[in-house]
Amino acid sequence: MVSPILHAKLKIILPQDFFMTLFKGLVLLLLLSFFQTTQSFSQPEVWKDSIDILLKEEVPTKNSIKKLNYYIAELWKQARVSDSTINQALHTVEKARQSGDELVLADALINLVRCYLNRYDSSKSLEYALEANKIYEKYGDNSKMAYTIMQLGVIYYTQNKYQKSLDYYEQAIASYKILADTFRLSTLYYLNGINNTRLRTYTAANGNFREALDLKLKLKDEQGIAEVNLGIAELKLEEKQPDSSLLYIDEAFKYILKSENKYGQAKAHLLKAKCFAVLNNFPQAFKNADLGLFIADSIDAKELVIDANEQLYKLYRNNESYPNAYRYLFNFMTMRDSIFNEKTSRSFSRLEMDYLLEKSKVKFCYWRMRIKIEPFY
Image (tube, rainbow, N blue to C red; front, side):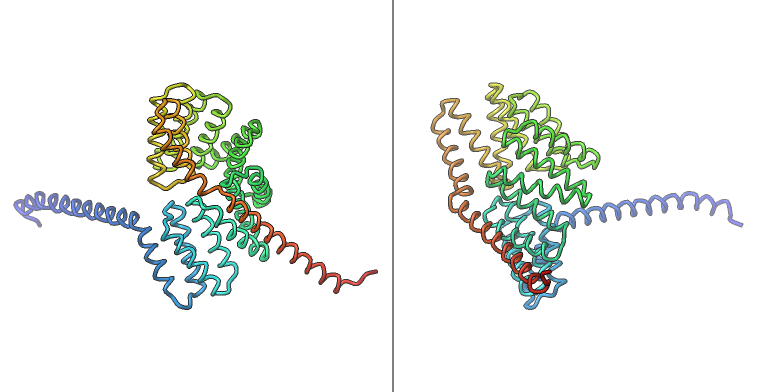
């Protein structure tokens, strides 16, 4: 039997031990949370280190190359594509060629395509996309063929060849309908809307965006919803409805700010600048254009940087501040010409012709074999 004095001591001591244990547990949880957060922030650096280690293997295994493809794809998803990442992607393609595994090579090529497109370098990406598509066709990988065709549409869009881009998107849509891939379909409807806006086929663009938004809402894809709202905002601006455009931009911002999407923020500010310029609210137009340029420049989004310089040139010209107008015009033309030039167009035509000739040659060989094998009756 416990004495009254000992019982009193236990009543005092036990709660203290309990709270001390609880405190230690909370401290441990906080430390674990801190280490997990630190790990998530440093993860891309870990991937880069892992890529460098794997690339040093003299005779890479198929598994090593698959890991390289995975790490580079993750860096691309997080929009962390630097010059170093592109070099790593190029070396991965070389290692994949050495391995002799064509499907692993095709995946490495698509990674390289996405990295180049992230840096707005479509002239280099076309060659690799066509090579990857040829491999996927050879092995009958319909899902990856559809994705590559979609990337070809993106490539031609970046070259302002909107109808050609639209043709590739339509091919991809037909494939993804068969594959019943709702997510890809929603993205392609959005991309079609952008192209039709550029082509000034506004009725078609409205239909595309509505289809995209319906699917994005069902999928609860918040980033996708924001992108579609920005697409509609751009369409409304083209249709001379700046007030309506601003409403869609504000709707997009609800989702953009949640995900800290820098590209989306830059695009939204630049669209706002255009709207305010149409509404003759020039102080607000300058503010949004400057902010859009600052964000776009910080993430090296060349397409948006070009757009921002063009807008600021027009704003300063309208304000009769000609030295500033000239500075932004010079920046705009220099950047635009570095991306869209005659040499690039010739390169595109040559690559496409080579690809079509290669396909024709394969078909010709196939039919020649059939003629030899199958007798005529």
